[in-house]
Image (cartoon, rainbow, N blue to C red):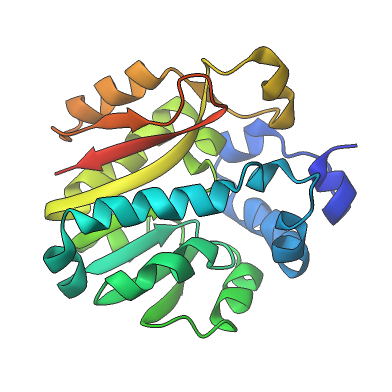
Length: 228
């Protein structure tokens, strides 16, 4: 039984749902997971937090913040697809303000109930939201947002992010890597597995002069770092 069926009583998502950008249908799926999301992540059988994935992401984010503390302390942090606010909770203290964006009202309700310092929550589509028309010290997304949406939309999101970064700012996204062992790919079916070098090349083409990939070369989940 898949994670979605086991914890949430719904089947794995169809990649066509994300490709078609049926936002209402996608939002309903995430709404149905909201009440159990945090407890689900604590389960030993939950691959979404395998190896303390959330903790590792936040720690990498902190290391990037340390290189630009003054910029971050006066600037804004944006968490795209923020869910219940787990990542934003760990990093918002380093920024002047933090914005969590998600299409799921129920996920945002859980996030808001945590009373995270300096945080505001916006019910928006990340591809069309107001965040991309502003400048931010950091843009984050933990939860393989890129791998949900595939090559074309991943490039669109990268392009939006690069334009939204304050000079000297950074972005950090995780993604599923095609270089991972085949046996681990069954944990996240129906997702896009990216070639790390391809993502870096696309990011540089789209304006990120400091694009790089972090994480173990055979890890299922790796990290795309974008710098202005």
